[in-house]
Amino acid sequence: MACPQRDFLPRSGPAARQVSSVARRFGEAVEYPFIKGIEGFPEITPVIKLEHETKNFGGIWHTDTAYLEIPPMGAMLLARKVPSHGGDTLFANTYLAYETLAEGKKRMLDGLTAINHSGKADVTRTREDRMRDGGKPEANKEYTSEHPVVRTHLETGCKALYVNYGHTLRFKDMT
Image 1 (spheres, rainbow, N blue to C red):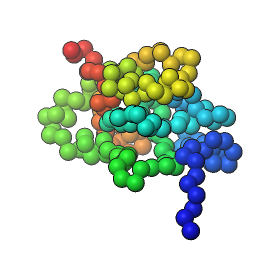
Image 2 (cartoon, rainbow, N blue to C red; image 1 turned 90 degrees about the vertical axis):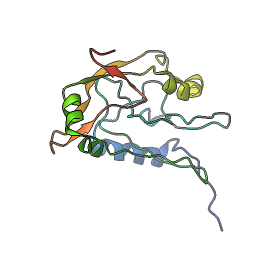
Image 3 (cartoon, rainbow, N blue to C red; image 1 turned 180 degrees about the vertical axis):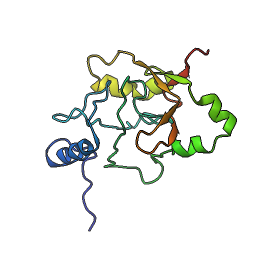
Image 4 (cartoon, one colour; image 1 turned 60 degrees about the vertical axis):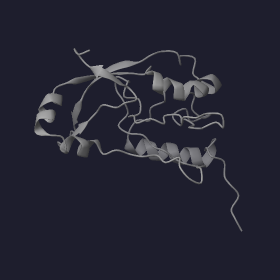
């Protein structure tokens, strides 16, 4: 006997409490700035693809909220309902991306600053329906931040690239 499909989102109660509790073990939970979280747990943002949409919400290569002055140290994803094929969430090893660069490219990127912005067109198109249906009052605010292109992990000393197609506009002092 097949189990009945469960709702795709922890609405409240034990499931949402568990997700929130696990996230807080890693650090401070940060609310997504554009869309209301679920009731009682504003740090849990529903990621839903509506039938008429052709692009997934966040469906381009990106680092979540790189446009914030102090971005969160990570993000969690709990998949409750996924398609029978496709719909993959992929992760990139930005440490390995840096390590495999040519030495000249590393020298060029070390010390550069990336300008990140929340309003890149490809990104905003994937959140239009979410903002219309569940946007926060301040959802039209745009965020811009500057972050090193190459970040060094404080504990390991490992270097990683911190640029992405979704939010990085350019390098500081360059067109």
